[in-house]
Amino acid sequence: MSAQHQFATSALTAGHNLNQHGKTVAVPIYQTTAYRFDSSDHAAALFNLSEAGNIYTRLTNPTNAILEERLATLEGGIGAVVTASGTSAVATTLQVLLKQGDHIVASNSVYGGTYNLLAVTLPRLGITTTFVDPSEIQNFEDAVTENTRAVFLESIGNPKLDILDIEAISSVAKRHQIPLIVDNTVPTPALLNPIKYGANIVIHSLTKYINGNGTALGGVIIDAGTFDWSSGKFDEFTTPSPGYHGLVYHDALGAAAFIAKVRIEGLRDFGAALSPLNAFQIIQGLETLDIRIKKHSENALALAEWLAGRPEVEWVNYPGHKNSREQILAEKYLQKGASGIVTFGLKGGFEAAKKVADATLIFKIAANFGDSKSIIVHPASTTHQQLTDKQQETTGVTPELIRLSVGLEDLQDLKTDLEQAFLA
Ligand SMILES: *Cc1c(COP(=O)(O)O)cnc(C)c1O
Image (cartoon, protein in one colour):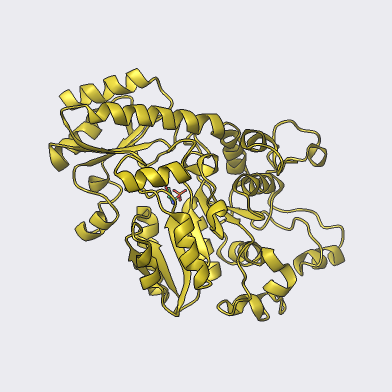
């Protein structure tokens, strides 16, 4: 099934082999913790990886496996591991990849939670990050040191909504033999596939557009299978692992060494497994992602154009609409749409922005995006208030900025709602 199918078809079918699952048309929920072994010898074979099969739902689960194969197919990867949240997908990736003394180069427009992990929490474990302005490719080159072991980006920064030139950045990472990790949450695989442009690992928060209903947290780590772990910079892939009876990941698993390590070390030791019930919820959303994200993009673009004509509005930002450089990047990376997030600044500044967010009725004030229902947030007073002024500035959060996650409601109703909030 799948590799030869178009996106909309794979989103509905990939990974679900009907004959393996009682000919169910819908993906079934395997709500079980453990799996019966045929014998103790069979169990031993599963535990030492000489045979494939289910042991325990922290490691594998048939519902989760369908979601994993589907997402790997949609991104063009060779394998995937789903996790309890987008945050745990980021954290597990870095925990599996890095050790004390290692260094990350990251774009400075990453999600607030990721920024905090890189800037505050990982340094406590001896892993440091240099944040760079991603609009100048040379900044990545300049930030690489002999200890750099990962380049981390978001394909579209949030809430800055800057489009990253993944292909140009990937050539810097490649030249230094460093894996490129791209968080592709905002555009989703329906609009952009970072692996096509050289990403080695792709991450999503499934909580956002992929679920789409705001009902379940989830994350995924997808391996392109394109990074050469034997290049000399990743000893843990080429020397015997004491955690697995001396298994040498690169020798035993080849191109799949990283994603295997994510499962057998990342999930085993850090335990951020996705609940199968949440996997089921996320699969329901993924089935309609293709049509939803196009409608989100359409509504968001129309609303951005309307906002630009309003007297209360100082500026409007939508991916591809800031300047000519962004337009060129949008033409290259976002031909099918630019997703559903719009930011704008109010002439009245911090206080006015806070008031407008409080006054909307259809737009709900909430810390989420990618829901079918429209969401409004004033990041400077909510999601980003724990960052310093300087950190707020580098992540693109200015005091007057409002972020809209434009949902699937009627466009005129959304305009009317914002209009009454402006007048309030
Ligand atoms: C929301 C988000 C995350 C974190 O995902 P959770 O599922 O909320 O843990 C990571 N990266 C980006 C770009 C996000 O938008």
